[in-house]
Amino acid sequence: MGRFYSTAICFLKDEGGATAIEYALIAGGIAGAIILAVTTLGGNVNAMWTRVSTAMRWRPRLVLCSP
Image 1 (cartoon, rainbow, N blue to C red):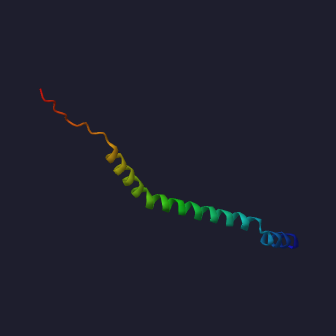
Image 2 (image 1 turned 180 degrees about the vertical axis):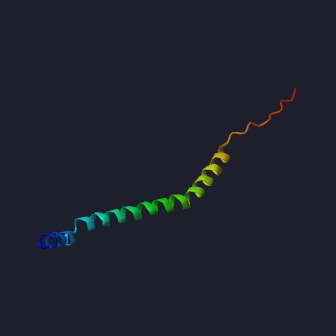
Image 3 (image 1 turned 90 degrees about the vertical axis):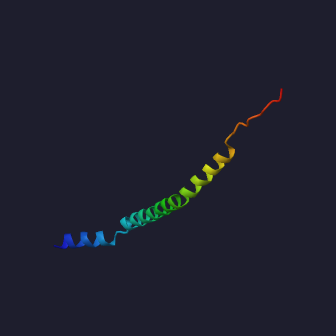
């Protein structure tokens, strides 16, 4: 029983796993923020480029030559 107890105490005192979990939570938060920003701004950026494309579209004009 003493060996199991000492192994359990060592396992509970080890903080290496906690650091990995903290980094995973930070990475998840950053990923969530990026997804939120892209989702929120994506439609606006698409609409802006559509307006730019429409404004730059070449439209030939009919020129009438008089004889």
